[in-house]
Figure 1 (spheres, rainbow, N blue to C red):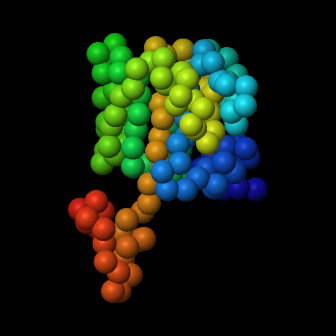
Figure 2: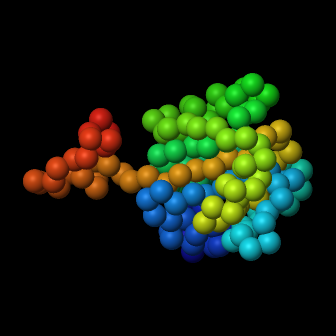
Length: 151
C-alpha cells in the first residue's frame, strides 16, 4: 500500500506522466469538461473534496512553474488568488478570459481534475516545471538564464 501523498490511482498515475510545460487543469464541480479530455473526477459532494485541498496535494508532488486562472479571479475571488500566490510562490501567474479557460485551456490540458468545489472561478491551470537545482546541478552544466535564479 502507498504510504502517503495522493492515493487516487488515476490522479497519481497522471501526475507521473507530466513533463515540462504540460498543463494540468484543476476545476470546480460545475466545470464543463470537454468530452475528449482526460477527465479525473474526484467530486463526491458539495466541496468534497474542495479545491484548495486538491491543489495543495498536487503541489506537494508536482513542480509548478506557471499558474493560469480566469482574469476575474484577482478581483472576484481575491481570497483564492491570495492563497494561490502563497501556495505557488515562485511560479509565474497569468490570466485568461473566463471563456478561454472553459474552452481553449481545457482542450490544451493533458488532464482535467474535477473537484467537488463550489467556488466561484475555481478553475486553475498548473504548468509543470523542472526542479532546477536538481536538473541543472551537475558539474559542468551551464544553467539557462531563465533558471539561474532558481539554482
